[in-house]
Length: 243
Image 1 (cartoon, helix red, strand yellow):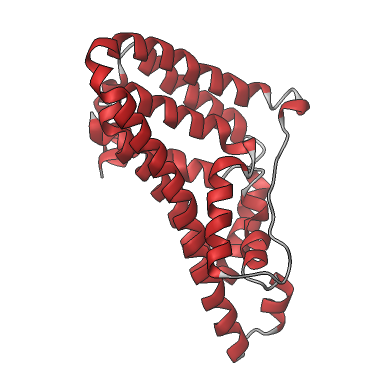
Image 2 (spheres, one colour; image 1 turned 90 degrees about the vertical axis):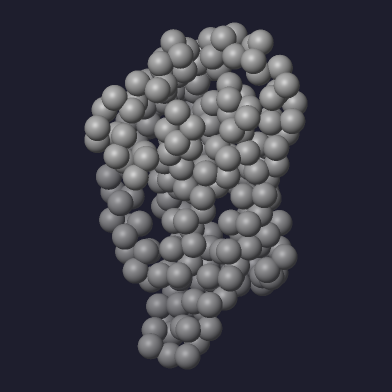
């Protein structure tokens, strides 16, 4: 059961990376926090400056990922310390309340495809020319706490899932951070290639909210009915989540 929820959390992190309001702007954002631009990188292709830019982007990306990973992990520690002592008595109620909340997050994602006012963003961007590793770390912290509500339904679902299993809360939020962070690191490591890949993927994101919303609702139903372990009954999902 724990391996299943950890796998779900990691996949949710990847799902957050692929969100339509995040994925298309990631190349420009990472270049921006690294004190360079995509155009500059392309102009210096094949020169020493390119290697310097790539290294700078990678290191800044690592600090950025560390920033939001620490915030999410702290969320997990707080959930664990606050709820774990009462979890045994409240687990049934937590499942019902948590499942309902998760279903609500899924419904929000589905409705956002029809109600444009739900698709709002709150982005925090660094100032040009102020790049530094500590600042990238700070913007990682800011990303976790409010860079955009776009990942809200997915992150909210994982936070709610963590609340229903507080003994695993830290591990779940850490798994979510890994799922979200690894693509960022790969983006920093293979910036030019990943930029082209993201540009290609971005053309096919119009059904993202519908698919993710449906999956979140399914997750909510499984939590609500205390049937999350049934995922292990499906060989393909079992192999995907458990390796």
